[in-house]
Image 1: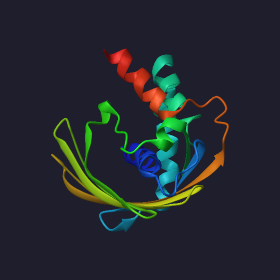
Image 2 (image 1 turned 60 degrees about the horizontal axis):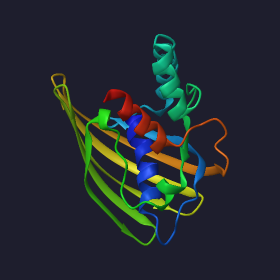
Image 3 (image 1 turned 45 degrees about the vertical axis):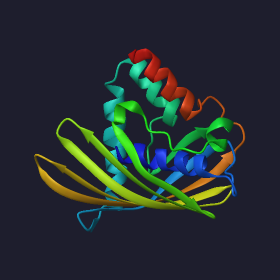
Image 4 (image 1 turned 135 degrees about the vertical axis):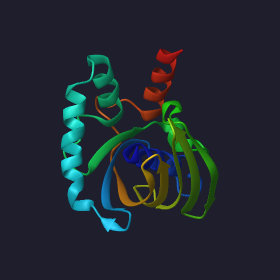
Length: 188
């Protein structure tokens, strides 16, 4: 879920861009820091990514293709890629995948700073959070603070990420809005 929120944040920052419009194309999202319950877990993230690769290996071919269409090849480190379409870059609202069951509760932009809040609920787990992104046409710096509550208790999570524009050409990676639309169409 953290990866989805980070990716959505980049898209949300792209969507909010009017004065400083981010470029459409291939973007790289790098996790800079991550804390869980006040403990720096950044060094543990690569092992979690390896676990994600193992999980993807057990997915159906269709599920794996959808995941790779959104994030490219399975991440092996703390960097992911996302394709931002021209429509996403020119939009004015954050995109939230329907299956993540999140709603943006607040979203505002002043100059090159985007401030947002969100709320997610799924299968007895709730996650609320807020964050801030500082953007330019070729980079987005984001900090997100979240609180998750479920049967196992309450946990806090803070992440810092840096996104940078890589290329106007996304190669084989589909734009995130197209992948979300295809996924929603398949569910209907």
